[in-house]
Image (tube, rainbow over all chains, first blue to last red; front, side, top):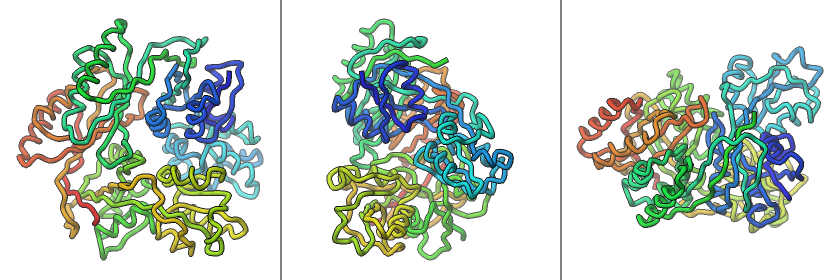
Length: 279
Length: 279
């Protein structure tokens, strides 16, 4: 079985993929577009993609890639995300003097409070990944610079972690989805069954979202998330991605989906899947 | 009057700021956080911030910055966004041989189709801004590399534009907001009056969004956009940002806002403002 994840090696998505599949071959993909393309083309059996973080919200490339390619969601796993501050070992005692802090924009955002407190005057540099931030620190021996990322990133580049768990929010978590054609068994603890739908809402139908939500409310189906994204045609044209708790009586959900399509809402059903949390 | 914009000089936000204020002092800010902070601290009278693009959707740092700091929106302007492919002048004839294409992730996303067609094998590198992409090209004379950005970026770094308007979508536009304490007059063509609200929706109230939308639907108020963003406390806690067309009868809107607060939806009203489009 071939499994792809959003790399590089040591990324949080890598950790999620390892939690799903303890013993399988894992292949790193540099971008979400390439990863989802590989899954849709059948080059890999499963793709593990980040979906949503407590602080940063939805991973927009994942949402848009699912809207464009309609892979099936076979599972969800939630991981705790902890960010570490790292420097070259010889600067471990002098980390507060760092003149530059670099990392991925999401990690920088997750550690805003820490950065403001400890590095009010330092230069902040955005990198394409937290791993590239660690690499930058490793390759700059002549200056004290720091980066923010996972323990794995520190280990890979022989950096010293000088402050642990510097993210602003204690409950910093990320949800990941497993995309594939077949259900997969997991040894993780089952949480609840969820389903995800995509619905196009046309620009010229005021109140359409209200009518859509009425159908779910009347059926007493609990929506866990609803989010709008652009259809990428013109400003004001959106689709909605809706996550919901699957009711025990599956027919209720089928009936709502049938009613939605009768009202000419183009609905795409992209998964009915178990959710897990890594302890 | 002091006006700040999301830089660097030559950015699309710079163009939006120039369209609003033809003759005023414009100050570039490197990040949206610093720009919104400067407005809230009163260091500048107005901040010009990007809000939403046709392809990429909302600018999340703007939405989150408004939620956290509650500045007032005094106007909206929509600009057409056109992306250009540029190389060093001596490589103008050989641009198709470029081994690397670099730009900001949003610009790369806007030109995906073009990149796939012309550069299927080239390395793609994400930069912190389109301007830094152009700088990278200017500073790499030994290799053929290309960057994607505005005409202004090409001009600033003496690069040659070798393909014009390479974005995937013809109607590629971005909306910008003007944040400030006082209304401001503009010579641009008025389009319509809009208002923006922020509403916290608690995790443990299923159907809350439906009840909220019912109030607007019953008052026949047309919502132009509704989007959820995380409250950054824990997964599943969201706030909604709602843009709407201001009804001619302003009392209708006041009544709905009153009803919302009666139902214990914490509502923040962040602006009632004119919208413009640059011709």
